Image 1: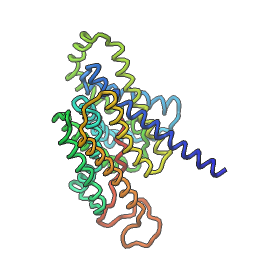
Image 2: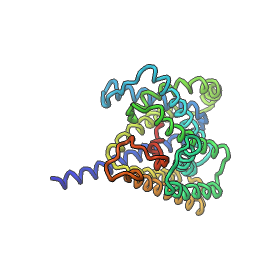
Image 3: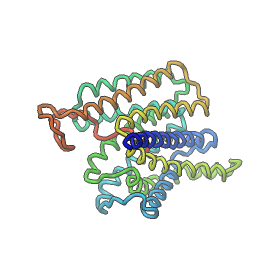
Image 4: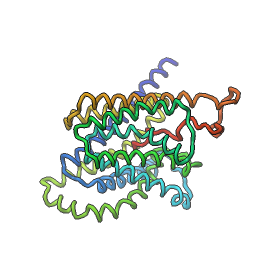
Length: 343
């Protein structure tokens, strides 16, 4: 009986990881297809459509189907805590879509793997947090791999590169703000979208209309099949919400170590699939740099997990509560960096 339960747990974890990979890679490829093949070069509007679809999807899941209980947030906290998070969340998604317009998926995904490094550096510089030397050592292959990939990228575009890099900073800022602004609320991915996506739609709607409205009208007049193109664009929004639901499922079906490894393998899968579809040129050294970055991310996740299992220095070996202080040594970043997949 116990063996069958163990086998089911393994199967469940594998299915959770596969569906997460499928939704993540499909969203990325679809967005790149929209910018490159449909010639719909309006990242603000694409992001806004994603937020609208995610708002509707989260409402259906929580309010209509009642698949997830609603986490109640005080009206004051919605503006004082949720709104700033939504603003950074919005910037994060927009920069990701902007980078997809100008650089290949493989390069963009590799740069996104730089997020652990920017998170640690921001916490060290701005919030004066201190980390174990092993955390700093684990960032070396990440930084080295990013540098090698950037230097050898055959389709390098400075604007797309900067957008992806600032997207990493936005993701790190969102990660850090989540700890300080959302303490006391145990949000899951669906409730996060439920509260943040409407704010993000409101923040992005007017800029998208003012900056891209006339361009979309011209695109409608010149595109041969605008209706089918819009179906693809709105499908990407539905897939973006499904990705959030898949993240919730995979977190509750796997361990922290499995989640970390699967997250890095997901990047490799996205790079491979995008190359098979778009055939963007990749040099040998570029592939090596991408591999070094992913190995560094895996090592970083392993180090972080190992340090989380250790008791604080100078204390007896007893179970540590989540709020136990670590003196001046903050061994770990605040929250999981792999949750930046939410679109």
